Amino acid sequence: MFSVKVTDHIMIAHSLPDPFFGAAQNMHGATYVTEVTFMSEKLNSKNVVIDIGEASLITKNVLSELAYKNLDELPQFKGILTTTEYLAQYIHGEIKKKINNNLKLKVELLESHVASASYES
Image 1: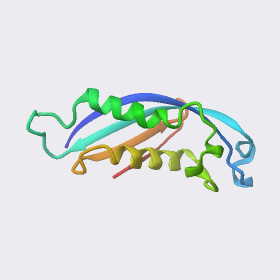
Image 2: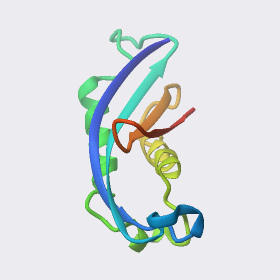
Image 3: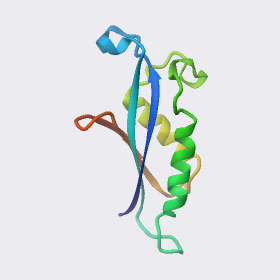
Image 4: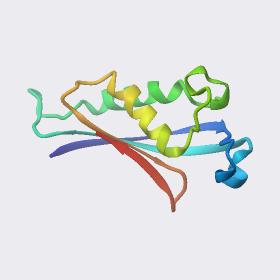
């Protein structure tokens, strides 16, 4: 399996209004280091999985739609607990819409140096 990984970051605000989340029920900010890995069993006609510049631009464009926003106020997240795992899946889906469907994709959001969550398919 071949892979190309690009890294960016995103700063958001949100709350997780459920007693399960303790203090995170309240409004708080999060900065996620975002790693996106594009994978393929074979290289394309240019001998790459995806152009690194294209991968970076797609990632940046998807993240820019969420950057510096309060996720609680965005219509696509109405009534949804925007956990790190859920956001990884959401970002994955938005990137997947913009790439060759033959590519596998993994999105990992690093909350800190000790915790992260990801979604892959």
